[in-house]
Every structure is written in C-alpha cells, then in structure tokens.
Amino acid sequence: MTGGLFITLEGGDGTGKSTQAALLEEWLTGLGRTVVRTREPGGTDAGVEIREIVLHHRGDIAPRAEALLYAADRAHHVATVVRPALARGEVVLQDRYLDSSVAYQGAGRVLDAQEIRELSLWAAEGLLPDLTILLDLDEDAARARLDASRTRYDRLEAERSDFHARVRAGYLALAEAEPERFLVVDAGRPVDEIAADIRERLAGRV
Ligand code: TYD
Image: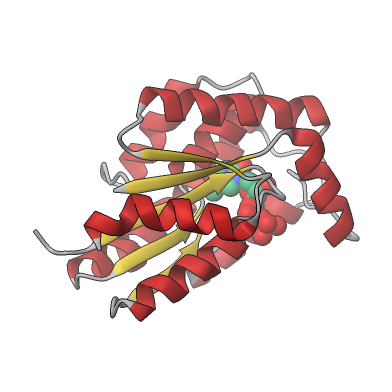
C-alpha cells in the first residue's frame, strides 16, 4: 500500500467539475494531504500540444485518430505525472480520465465503447481510479450554464444536444456497471451540498 489515492471527476461540459475540484482540494489539503491537481487532456507539456489539436483543430479528425490522441495524452500523463505522485503517497485529483473517452468518443456511435476502454487501459497500463465522481446534469441545464459562461465553444462543446444526451447516458451506464468505483451526484443541487456528499464518500479513505 502506498497511501496514494486517485480521484477523478467526470461529467458533461458545464456540470461544475472545476468548482468541486477546487473545494475538494481545499478540504484534502486541510486534512494534511498533498494534492496533485491535474487534468486530461493537457496535464503535461506534450499533452498541452495534443489538447490544442483535439479541441481546436480546424476541420475533421477521424474518430479513431481522435481516440488515439486522447489515449496518447493519457499514456504520457499517467506515466510521468499520475503514477509518480501515487507512488509518493499523494492524492491525485484529476479532471477527466478514461471514462471521458468512453462517454465522448463512444457517443459518436462510430467507435465501440469496450474497445475505447481497452485502448485507454492499454495506454494507462491498467490504472483505474479509486473513486470517480460523476457530476450528472441533464444536457439542457448544462448547456444553459455553458452559454452563461462562454463566448466561444471548443469542438466538443459545439456538438449538438443529442450528442451530449448520449454522452450523459454513456456516463450513467458506466457508473451503473461499476458502482463501487463511482459516486454519482446530481449536479443541479447547491454547490455546498454536492461538496458535502463527496466528502462523506471519501471520509473513511483519507
Ligand atoms: P475539459 O478540459 O473539461 O474542457 P474545458 O476546460 O473547456 O471545460 O475537456 C475538454 C473536452 O475534451 C471535453 O469536451 C471532453 C473532451 N474529452 C474527450 O472527448 N475524450 C477524453 O478522453 C477526454 C479526456 C476529454
């Protein structure tokens, strides 16, 4: 046992992941834990370049190429940031991980969800989170929040609402399949209540 803890936050765009990550980081730090706050895509220098391609490239990217770009970002990030931090006994608090790939790349209906999961697990040499917090919000509410905060959308955010409905359904199916890894919270509730639910789930483990 290393004492390291790997926590990921998942959910559609506009569900409040960053807000909850900040509150959780504050709580964990207050408990004396060292927290590495990171994200995918873009948690490393090489990853920042990959992020630029997947989010802002003009024109189409073939679905398999897109899946491989996210997997490449993940492979490098896990090897150089996540695993070393866990080995030092730290808490890794990460915005998005392999469930994002399954939910988003799988939602395009072209790629098989199981294959995407296997690709990610290969990239990450099998590393799964200890806890995955899914912030669940219906796509219209999420869209309204995004509209209020953005003047410009990235490639994924600009997808139509049926795409985002499939992403949400994909996430809920993943959570149902692995209830011991997932905590699903209704992201429409007040920020403080959500944060309290997350702390309660983690209480025995930190
Ligand atoms: P994110 O960093 O949460 O965007 P922002 O900072 O603009 O809120 O995520 C970027 C986008 O990448 C998001 O729309 C989901 C998408 N994504 C995938 O499609 N597959 C993946 O494997 C990951 C990690 C993200």
